[in-house]
Length: 282
Image (cartoon, rainbow, N blue to C red):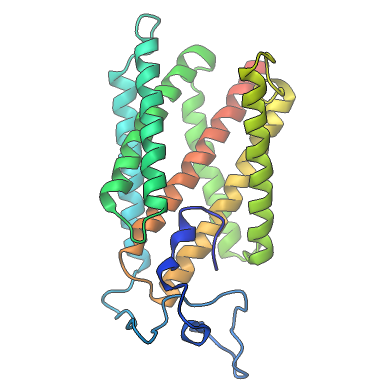
């Protein structure tokens, strides 16, 4: 299936033009129907592309190692940024400028990778490094001026949400199908449109915008963001499982790492928002 995660939507894109009979799922019932009807196999051998050998196919270990490398890069640069880019009053403007610049570079790198036909480890790790700089300065600023200790709580909250989604996915308490993907995509579109409207209202002198940055409405908006992140994470788990089952090329493990990292960053930022607003209200 195609996940709503814009990174994972690139999986199998190079095989989209193959005839349908060349993309039959690996698991079919006795009557010839797919065991999981909303899936097709974009990695099945076609007339011009041989099937991946077992040696070249992605494994769960490949995904785990590359995801660990990517997240480790984010964490390392975040810690270094926290330590080396002070956020005291004398240096806040400089550090904040570097963080915004890093965020823009990370965004550009993520867009380049999203539209490439194959994964680039250099782009992915570069994105992770610049994203870490942004997160490090942002987290340090929030912890220093808004809510001391909230960063540790946000990290633990991100792990808790991820573990809960993984447990629910593995136990099949949630079914990740086309309907689920469509719901998450629609909800995320509405969420981002509201966020854009809030930024526009704030930019044109509406003070607190639509009120998504404070109070109970801000906390509710943040919780919705966390839930959406959890939905994307479930889609990511499904995409990884399908890629391993269908024998995707080993290089696709880098795309898995990229998608999982972007989703976990989303969840962390939303958890950080909720906890900061909750602590400030108390």
